[in-house]
Image (cartoon, rainbow, N blue to C red; front, top):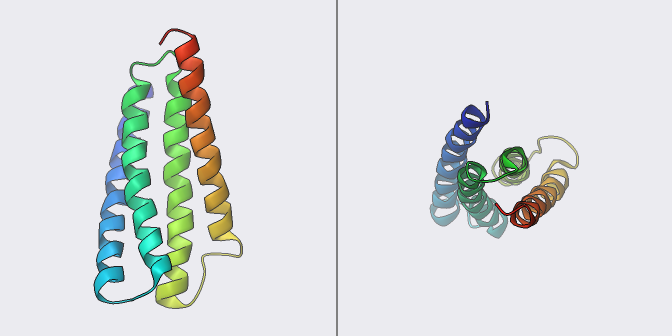
Length: 125
């Protein structure tokens, strides 16, 4: 179960990272809006972080926490960046408060990752 969960995280992270590169190209060549570039950067950075968290999970005494942080991070960054992209490119929104909700969940995901790291270190992992 944990192995499959980690592989799903890595697969989704690949898609999120690809979306970030594509969005960065749009931001650089088609739409000069700094919020679009921020959304692209968030996608790329959090995709890499999710891959790293999923990899770390395999050697941790608390793998589910790392995998949960990675999954939450992927969901949250898609929500945040998706809403920003829809606002810029389609002049709409996913739903009210989508970007702030995604941003808040990103903070939570980083806190879960931090706690998982500290607890794993204390457990001798």
